[in-house]
Length: 306
Image (cartoon, rainbow, N blue to C red):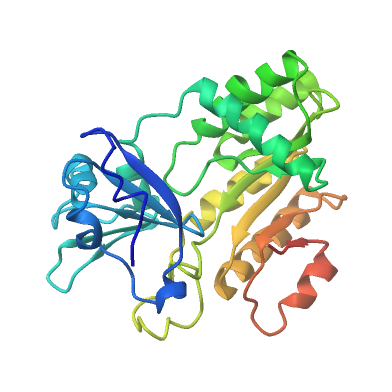
């Protein structure tokens, strides 16, 4: 396998090489490793996100910058992939990605503003006039990123009347109070272009990264049932408080066990807070246990299949 972006010899030594979209299922299933790209990137840290956003691939330079060694513990809700000898392979799953991502310089405000314009133009060429932006928040990543994009990009672009598509914004559920305060002050609409949708959290990881949470283990990893990336008590409390504040709640869940967990939380919150048209969402709702699909309709939960 060749990776043109990684083998770019014109890259200045010491600068980051960033990319993504790789899918090991397309080349036979073998997971990549730092050693695959170390020879062509001896002087540059590399970070390549998997297509699902729940796994990242780093070279040895990036691992060193992040201080990741065979002695580094797995963070809560994340995994550092290792060799049989315990050495990091270069793959980081879910919240472990922050170990490297935190070392990457932030994209400039001008570049992010330009990205919004380019993305909007592309959407319009496809006939898309309204989108939902769930933000840059992933397990282990800073919850501030979504708010920085709102302030630096959306708020600014709206103020100078340069919005081109309507956007419904969701923010990390851990910041529900901040969004509730904003909605109480401004209402759910900043303008005809920007709408405050609600909050989002994560229950598990992804199937392709073997981190979606299941009742049964993965066939190729008999000790791996997936990852619970947010503690259930925290999910329950944040969901309840967000709901009481009138915010729509969306939670990412892919594995059957994760979906049942979130449906149970939603049922508990609805019973406690009283019935209303709250439209709880489960993002993906990908793998469901027998009997689970009918719960969505009965309990009024949106299966946001993607």
